[in-house]
Image: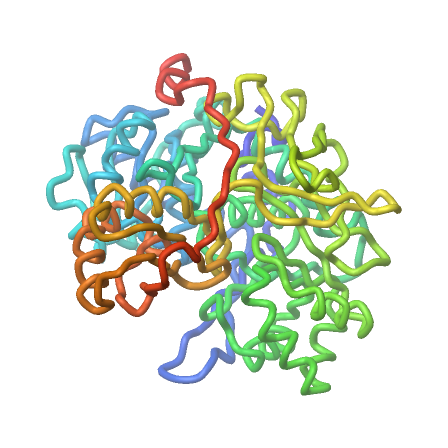
Length: 512
């Protein structure tokens, strides 16, 4: 299998042909203050570490009767460099990683997702031992074996799993659980082959492109980022944390040569505010090759200000299921976008009072069409996102067509599901409710009721306790300060469009 369809073959090819190229810059953390040093990890060093851990995992999984090409669940934050090593090493050992982020805190949901994906074992961060206490599957704590491992016999590239590559989860829960998002080798290769055209603009530079890390590998964006940088000979700088200071941004530029920011709009906004006040911070952003963001937009005022001040801002519209679908139009503020070259899509008008709003639909013949169980009955993927076409042919993002909102890090929250649960368990207490909190750390609940405020909040939180336990942490309402009581009849009501998946994921997996 060639490098076009196998990301392990791509890694080995790059290790042989350009092994000295720096792929990662890892921060040397200090007791206080942002890091001032970063350690380089070359492509060949990363590849060697992957092979070491793959050898270790091959031995351990074989001893636990987990055959090659099985799905293996990884329960971790995904934010550490070693988490990426484990993920790629599992694939190198001919297993299929199922990423399970630590923000999913209900063991029952985790085990149910493992069963749906056909996982045979769970490998977990030792800090998450409490989530595996009554695990019905074999389990193994993830230690750090890189220094003690030796490379033993590994499968040839041709013997690696030839169909499924990774199993991801949607960032929001539907009916109390995220959806599985399986990805094949061919599907992933579409991602990284388009990296140059999307994030590099097809341009070449005399020096290396140095990108900011996208965060947890539990997000497909981070996997796309890693593979795209590997494919194009670029480098990834890891900050001490994703909400890093402008002081740390300056260090990454001066010490690491960072020249391409890639982040969520939420985390970019503070640096824009700093640039408005500090010429040095403004220069940091102006001298970037690109300052790209996705998932969460910035304000129109900030977008215009960046455009007027020569900051090379770039907006990217992407989904967990399909990766990048639209990018900003050069020579305009970043909010004006067009579809990515090579995809097949359609913009359908909405019904009702806003005919200018268009539904974005990825068509069945697109190379980025996701797994069948995520599609509508017509074979297309309905994103649920709305756009407005401009006179010059560009598009403006205008929000979602349903009741989903986004948290501050772009994770999804199904407000309708929370509202329905409140009605279900609190029908005797609540006359009406609305969940809000777009781009906030947690959602808030507004309730119509005649019951006294303090006692009602305590009752509602108690009745939601089991439901909250099954949700991602960003979906949970667990603090009475996030519950607000209003007069009866003042809350708005909304209607959402629903699309029913056409195929069951587990039954499709069994056809492999």
